[in-house]
Amino acid sequence: MWADTLYALEQGHLLRLGVWAAVSIMGGTALLAWLTLRQVTAPLVRHFAMQTAAWGAVNAAIALWAWRGLTMRDFAGTQKLLSILWLNTGLDLGYAAVGLTLVIVGWHWERRMGAVGAGLGVVLQGLALALLDLRLILLIGPLR
Image (cartoon, rainbow, N blue to C red; front, top):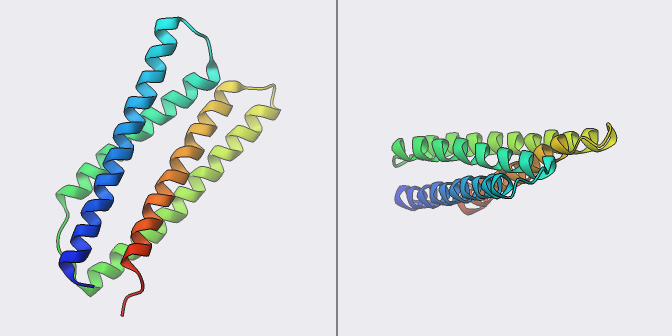
């Protein structure tokens, strides 16, 4: 793979991460605003929205930081990128597992809907980030 092709793939990946971050921030904030304006008490939705907006802010910061450091990569740099992507994918799936644990524990422990909502938010973010990272890994493909 040529360095400029990989550079374009990384740019696309960071743009998709930025779009996901923006959607998460706007969606979470809109849900929180709706709950506040309607004066609705819905712990599941409130905690889901808080997780969604917070993860969106962190993802936006990561995308902006990574964009600043984006450069052409040689073979060793590509290997390093793939290693980071595989590590991130594992962490992303770990986040989803932690979120699922929150959902299960929250549901079985006196129906703590706040924990269930937060867990659902973490599961959504973890799986979405894993899919984004796996997409880039598959686009890079096997290195020769």
